[in-house]
Image (cartoon, one colour):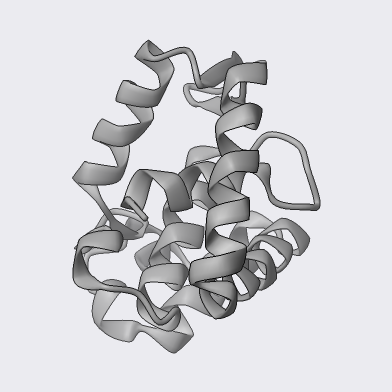
Length: 147
């Protein structure tokens, strides 16, 4: 599986609905740190303003948007956009899910658990949990300094 396949599966996993960029970044970070994946299936992360950040993940989001597999919805009074799969992206997700069920069921289950976790936490709780588990990725955080 490609790392962008796992990104598509994160966006498709229940509980459904669009995700903000922070949840996508943190969800894929937790997945990279916890799931049994080959190196090429993981995004690389570095400490940044709100904890772990992957430039490659942003590049894949842009590529998926250009391929019309992913759409961005504006959020009132916010500079960021919600990310969700298009119908074509949902079709790709179903195909990737079937493959993962056969080839990597443990990783697929881990991704579903991470999606549930990041969906249940508010912004502050999510960052606090990630920083607590992986403090080396919080060293450049502006959020931590404000707390």
